[in-house]
Amino acid sequence: STLKHFPGHGETPENSHLVVPVVDMAQAAWAEKDKIPFQDGVDAGADIVMFGQLTYSSVDSQPATLSPAWHQILGQMGFNGLTITDDMIMLQESGDPAYSDPVKNAVASLNAGSDLLLYVNDHGGGASNVDINALVSGIVAAVQSGQIPESSIDQKLAKVLAYREKAGAF
Image 1 (tube, rainbow, N blue to C red):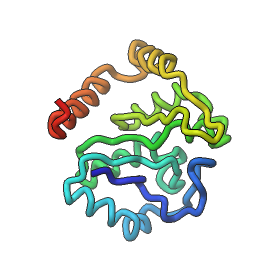
Image 2: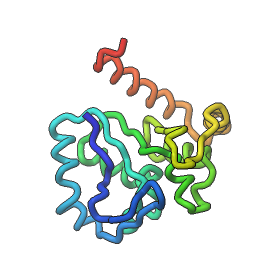
Image 3: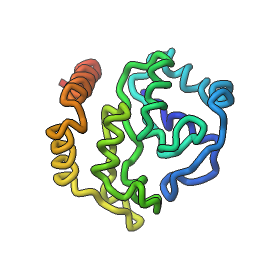
Image 4: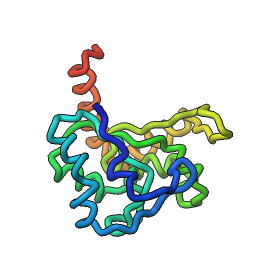
């Protein structure tokens, strides 16, 4: 199963397909309320957690998909499965120029702790598409320059392959 959209969309009425919602809630208040279903899912053995494209400003100024702090919090909750982003194109379409570069977003998300990056090209509504070849080339360049440790990519690949074997994909 996949838990989503960590750390939770319940505190905002905004549509993260249009903007990056900002939630002004203390981490302690989040822990008392919104953490509970995620913790229950982690404790039940969920294999995957999808991070949401929203910001909890008391924890990090970055959206959860780009936030090392939120990835660390999930690890502290005992989760050691796969992490995946929500559609990364949503960041580009938010209108915030800070998220206009798909390679920069991908590198930030991988460095934050995401194992898998989700891109939904051609999902209608005039949505932007991402040139996957350029994206992959940009990530490769980030690894070659040391911006992303090669060992991190190796660890992510090992987790994905282990999950695929567990799920019977081989």
